[in-house]
Length: 331
Image 1 (cartoon, rainbow, N blue to C red):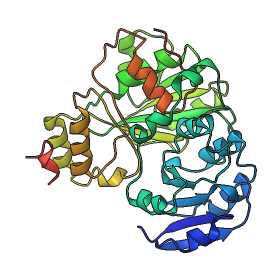
Image 2: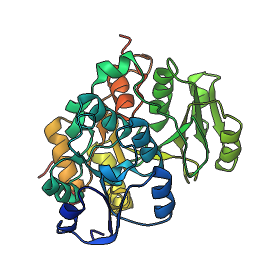
Image 3: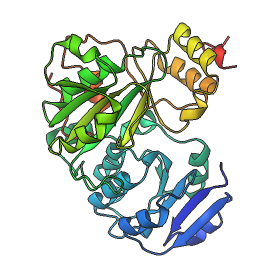
């Protein structure tokens, strides 16, 4: 897999040419995001290393936001230049808000990040949450090259371990988001939403989902509780893991490659009692990075700091604060 990396270079082409990694494609010049999207549509790669000066108008953060819509931010490594704008705390904070956690000015670090990608906790110190709360600092909802929608983000939540809490988490996220966003919340192939007694929760079959999206063009956010197969219209999927030993043992017994199959995806620990050191050990033994750790929360309370922080980590800038080994089963 390491042999299918892509490099997009301009100013730092000489440095990137000397980078001792396997590359399947290397283009040089200055490109618009639309040109890059067209070039790499349906092109499979491991990591895309981008010399930021190769992006036209890269100092405009909305241009970088368009990049995040067209490409999986988890697969992108940004090599930054010496621009005062690009190195400003505000610009870096916005990169983190968009999900770009792998950025550096050091060419040697680029190589390191290919095999050791950052998670949110690695760059959380760059995230200026107070500034984000005061004022939206970029347009979160722009053109999506794959769906054509403007102003809408569709996020699916799927239990990886059995009953990891996707239904309740989606409900809580909806209650937190609807203070600042137009939100629709839907479960696919289930009827658990009826238990919340909230008429604004929808339950449909997977076959109805495309029509559901078309019927709700004004929703800025559509949260999807996924049961069974996923839909092609879902922009991003978050995999939930309840990290209890019994739940993890059942998962591994059912599919011992479960974590390999979602390598590089957003994994969230839910209903978690793990400490930071426990999470480090979980990552080492499972071979996966944890995007976020959510403890047990009261589902009757709709103002949890941890839920707000999770939504900020996902890039929702309008969110305000209203208020042997441990896992030896992987061996």
